[in-house]
Image (cartoon, rainbow, N blue to C red; front, side, top):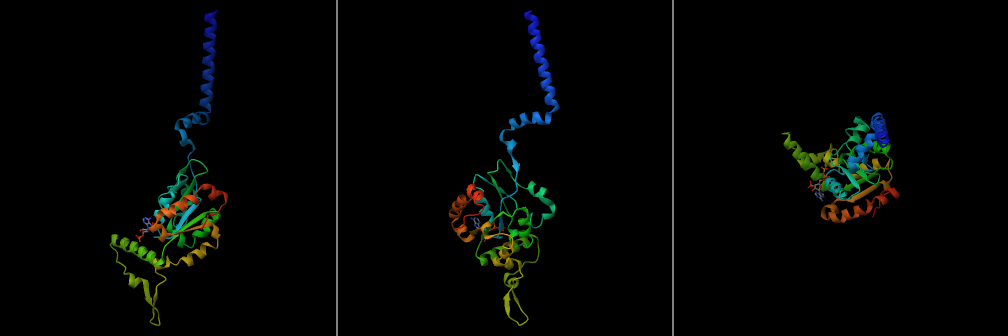
Length: 249
Ligand SMILES: Nc1ncnc2c1ncn2[C@@H]1O[C@H](COP(=O)(O)OS(=O)(=O)O)[C@@H](OP(=O)(O)O)[C@H]1O
């Protein structure tokens, strides 16, 4: 009798086990994935997220140093490389853009991308607005003359590396008009890039000033800690999301 009931219990357990196994095999993607995810720990929650803030410029304004400083914030994830999505890579589409993003663990984390070429490209403000009218825009500016010299230096060394004819700043930066008067050449890119008012006016057609955070690049360069502290404050994600605007001061 005891033997019979033991066999019965074992048989029942085996049957239940087999049913359970078959059920899980059938719904493998659903059930086993759950176990696998548990094994992976926190990684199961990671997902790519579009940026909520862009460092749009200015080129040679200290954008790299600023991005690195912002990345110190534990709730900020950054895109290390410049994606150039809204200017040169727009045709690659939003799936491509998302692929460039870092993974976040939860909604409290924000993603920040920097591509300084955005600021001066005439197509970018509209494209950014169409993707997210609440996008936060960070602009680090610098004395325009220093910026121009830095920009020119980069152009110069790029040409040097490529064995191209080297530009001369005094030749490129000035041109003589028909009346024989020497004027600043506003069509020369390193010069044009420093015309902050021209470019910002294009952004302001789409975005309110409250979407912008302006950082003084000269102060940041001289005393990064002051600006970093400031950033920690405003990037304290509650401010960022609750009020929907930056705290400018
Ligand atoms: N904190 C800090 N640390 C290091 N470098 C700093 C910093 N702040 C500003 N800079 C100066 O920023 C200039 C480079 O700017 P960007 O990073 O915007 O360049 S780029 O547009 O991405 O190529 C480059 O300027 P130049 O040296 O005059 O070329 C950097 O020296």
